[in-house]
Every structure is written in C-alpha cells, then in structure tokens.
Length: 151
Image (cartoon, rainbow, N blue to C red; front, side, top):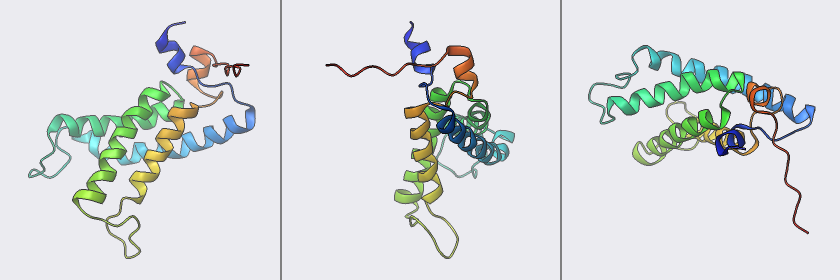
C-alpha cells in the first residue's frame, strides 16, 4: 500500500461517529466556503493594499478556505485539505492573538481569535480521525483498519 493511499484512507469508524463527522463536515465546510467566497473573488489581493502579506500567501489562504470547504463537505482528500486549513487558521490565530493583540473572546464585538482557534482545533480533529465512512475518501481509498496493540 502506498503511503499516499494510507494517508488518505479514513479510519474505520462505526456509523454513529461517522454520522457526527459528516454533520460537522457539512457545517464547517459550508462556513469555510462562505469565509473563502469573497477572498477567492480576488485571490491575490483580498487584503488591504498596504498589507504586508504577499499575494501568493493571500491566494493560498483563499484557496484553502474556499477549496478546503468544498473538499471537507465531500470528504475528499480530507487530510490534505485540513492541513491547508490548519495552517491558515494557525496563521489567523497568531495574527489576531499576537500581532493585533485581540482577546480570545471579545464580548463587545470586534476582533478576537476564538473562531480561528476553534477552526484550527476542528482541522486537527479531521487530520487525526479522517472524514468518517460517509465520505469520498472512504469510497475511493477504502477504510484503514486500526492496528492491533503489540502483545
């Protein structure tokens, strides 16, 4: 079995956890499509002109949000999509927490790093568990059997 196929194979999970992952995939994927939609319209320049972020990094963020949202809904290439989204959300978290000095939660509205950190945690969850058995990854690559513990 190739390493790529092994990485793309979701773990074999029962129907209930797979259903919960499907529900989470649909909600978070749709949210990322909406977050990325405006950015993908002008992918190399969606930040203000005086932004220090180069156009290629803006493109990668726009693509990871919009394309990653679609991939997440479909459960297609999930670990790769979540790696891109995870990096994007890690950068967003650092930008809000360290550069802009936004609070974790801002009860008055305005900037915070809460949402970016939650999305980062969700990306890590999907990297760790995969998309579940109700996904294109499972259909295309099969399910990964858990290894038996060494005796």
